[in-house]
Image (cartoon, rainbow, N blue to C red):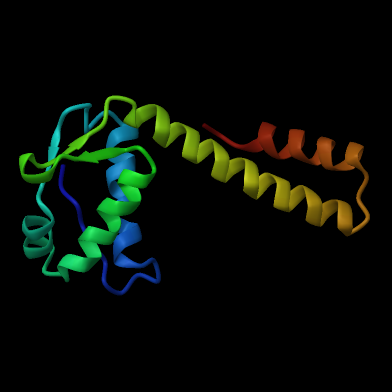
Length: 126
């Protein structure tokens, strides 16, 4: 899997790495047991600071996506796809709660919010 960084993006570089690795796991491009480049190698390949890659790997490890095994390397965890899905679901739920709270705060009723949600969902193409 190739990781591409856009330095002009407002998204921090470490988050770009995290997002792309998670996407690779979710799409099956990265499978359990697959090795990731070392921090040094990825930093050199992307021409970025090693601490940036280390921060991305730390976040991925904290999220249960990768496992760092010392000198043996860094690997995709067995339950990585499940963890990525769980994280995405959590993010979506938080965003929905925030939106619903805002709409209710603006005076919409629960029935109106529900109807609006159904209408929007019906209009979205997969």
